[in-house]
Image (cartoon, rainbow, N blue to C red):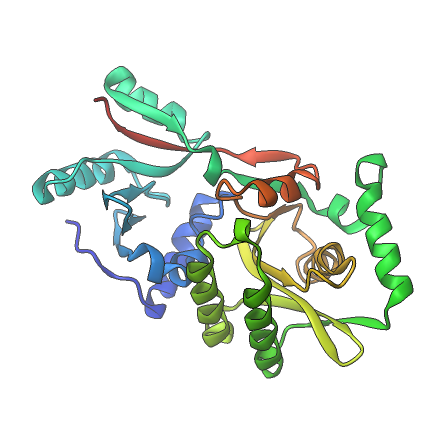
Length: 299
């Protein structure tokens, strides 16, 4: 039986092994993203049959996320459909990856509508390529980094709890200067990052900071999505510091590869449909996208 409750930090205990069993590179499933964005998504969660049931409630109506885990998925989906019917909202699944689509089609065939949600597709990069930036395609990134190194007395450090106040100040200053294209959803992101700072140790996040002299100019943080994929949740830098963004990107990837030698992929999450963010993510030439779909009743 589905017994949903608001997500809390205590849910990490049971969610982490369920997500590990799914072994997906998607950024949607790890506990960090569920917990950090809860102010925006107002999620209800519960375990069911070895799987995780997540019901966000934003936009126009509640819906379900794909129930990740390792138990038999058919009775879980049936329970979710019955719950939606009893509560009076359509049974809609989101966060359905391309790997899940064969099962969706085997279960429901042409009785459901499958819609690609391109704005929510994750960008997946080869970790070694982000580390070395080798090849012609990434020569522009190397040029920016070379200029940064020539112009600045810089250092990279792990992000520790003692440095969080400096990161909060950087975030506030970044908020004051963000452009119009970045403004959509910026308040939700700001609250998510502040929640990450508030619960940094408890969530087990890994982060890094870039300094010029005594001044912090960039930070990044995230967590493992699965054993071979690291999910970079947030990355912020001063836009007026030439090369700060490519530099924090490279140095953080190097740091993560040192912590987790098994990591082959870096998930830099979606672009939410923002043109400047899409251009930026494409400029690093992802190896592939983690495609996501919405599955619902035909209308």
